[in-house]
Image (tube, rainbow, N blue to C red; front, side, top):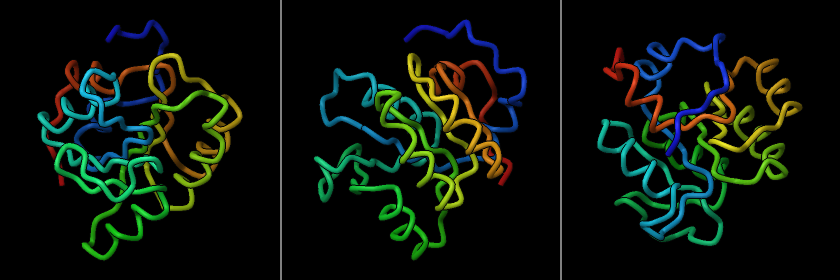
Length: 153
């Protein structure tokens, strides 16, 4: 993983990591050598709850968490536990982001995070207009290692 050179001056990363503890990882792979798996495993080690979202693996368990087909399905299941999805971390191509952003808005997520190499300005504008913080072209694992991530909940 490489640190991004993209500025994110509008984001208070210390607050973001302290206040948001549940991360839906869209596109999480079962293959341990894939970046999505490595990042999700690291975020678990940092104390975050990871919610796998991958329609090809729905109904299985990844990193000891049940995998859902969609964000909507994951949010509904977690709501029964009194838990919301705080961060939607995307490991999908830029062309796939618009419907994921729409789902993130619909489920009441607080943050839309697009990993390194993923940018969708139109989806970002829409998500920001709905009140979400948006981070694009950055690695959540790298930023979480840099900024304190103690829970304030």
